[in-house]
Image (tube, rainbow, N blue to C red; front, side, top):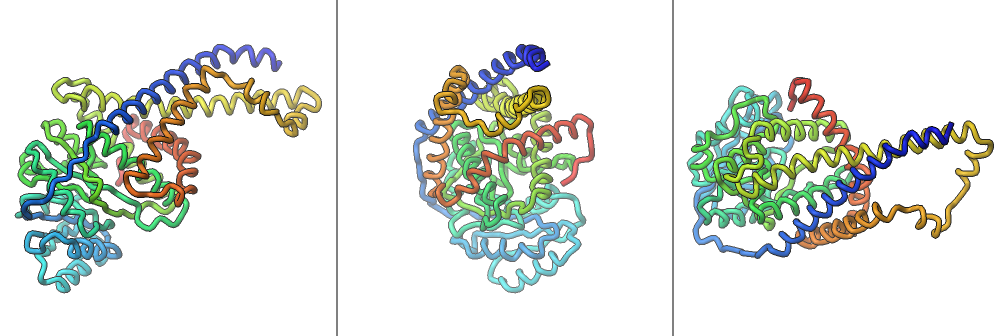
Length: 427
């Protein structure tokens, strides 16, 4: 029985081996590209020659506990207060957000802080309300549960010397990571920031996180402001995609650091990532015209296809791992049931190092080892670039590799099914 079971699975195992090869070589190819971009990056720091007026929009829904901390981080920044306009948009909050916001205004009368109270219409409508009132040359979005550092705005503005720059994003850190899940996300954010910087160098960055992203007000109004489609769950991705579609660049300033509160439990984390994934699918579909588009350069010919391939290969890779685990578990169970003493023999049997080495398939192990070395190089470089010490977050790094690939795969599969069957999109 075990022999026939093994023979029946041989063609499948052979096919899976070839698929794994494709995944590994794609990973190697992508790693080499990112390393090439990394070494091609030229550091250019431009000093701010003047201080143009900046309007900062803070969309807020039920943020009574966090909004004061957010506004305080802005008023304490080193950007001139006479050149700073703050617009808090209370988007129909059911808590004390409006009252707390008014108290903040009363405490900071020397600053130009405006409060807009409006019925609930979603984050995009709140941002658009601020854009309509904005008088600054530049418009920044800061989420009401985030905070910026003293020089965050100051360091972003010089990037706008390039006329085709539509937006500039900052580096996002997880604020005060204490729990294991927060530490995992801290590590994830370090790597995400690093990849975003490489994308910016390549000219393919297309995301403007709400923690702090700065736009040219004129361009925002020209492209129609933030999306009015309430089915769009990721307005920060949509506006960046629209800017790319219109031919504008999205840049990143890694020295501009901002902080966000990360989900502290699995339920909140799952919900957040479902929203991100469904928004990603929705926007990739809406802007599919850029796929393989020569008009949109490297973004259309390289980044858009890679965005789709990465998701597909992640799901395929984890599915292969799950299949192999299930296959070996079934085989072990059958042999344990049919061969006397097999269970305890295998359970207590420890292979020698030589046996372990001989059991490995070099055609698979070699690209895995190469990919691992290149990946480790990128991880070290990412932490070095942002002055983060990986030794201080070993738990986060280990948790990321042991947990995130499987969690993300399950999340993507769920999101794809929800999009295919058009289940209600929830924030």
